[in-house]
Length: 178
Image (tube, rainbow, N blue to C red):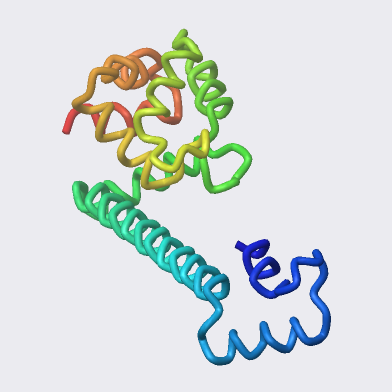
């Protein structure tokens, strides 16, 4: 449409806009009679409306995600959430605020569990809502909830019963018995 503006302004079709044509274009823009400028304004308005729709969609997605995260935390009493936080911090070896697959693998290895990396990845993917490749605390709580009732509960059962002397066993035995 910028080309249309130039063509409209180039009255003598010389391929150049001289000062008289430039002033004429400015007058047409000022008076609102330039068809090309109207098209540019409409395109700009359409782009602005589309950007607003995108911002509204992203805001709704953030609000929905926040509500879902809140609902996950409400499934457990504060005492259990405190225990989950301690266990999460134990898993988070690098203290990054999230548990990566390698940390979950290392924890299972320390417990002499032979859970395949693929199986652990499946478990993580079920709760990794933001697609970060790691799980934050709320996603960890959701993983605990899935471990209690989900299709991968055998992993948690094994964690709770495989190695009795492990630091984490007390947590998982307690959690599993609830």
